[in-house]
Image 1 (cartoon, helix red, strand yellow):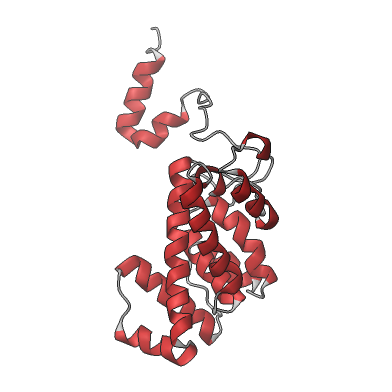
Image 2 (tube, rainbow, N blue to C red; image 1 turned 90 degrees about the vertical axis):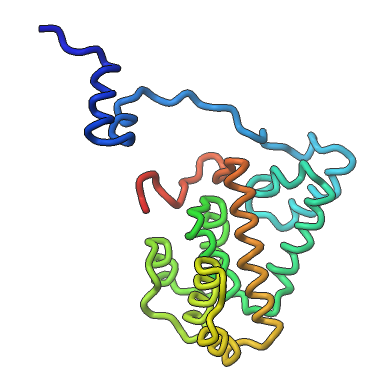
Length: 218
């Protein structure tokens, strides 16, 4: 008896084991064109080049990551760059906690570029390797200082429940001043927007670098 055609077998497997099982039998996917081909400095026009020069001075991914789509709207891109600059280098939130907040958003969104860029910065700023590793696994880190636990709970509560409880806000007032609470909220919201930009543009880590989050992982 002849075996069933491959497509029939695939359909049967899909019915039994779901879409994922069926797609595992498929051949290699055809590489699609990038949504936004990577720009280089020599491709920028007169409106884009001043922003590009600013980006190149501070970016760990050059004109990649969120900057690749952003620079296509140079006026917006400049406004966002100025916001990024404040929220990265002039914010009132201590760098260790600021980078922790960014990583919390990166983990929620499984944002390859955000995690790739900011995990080393968080470690350099003093966030422990254990906290980074547990967060990457999708866990609430077990051993956090009071300010780290507050940062985790504040950002997570705000982004997942769309509110901050009185209890959490009271904890925040004991750890942060008013400006720091506002700045912490802003950095979380900003990096949700960055994650959205990256997801929309299907941006990933630089060529030859390993993506932090593997397919199939939660």
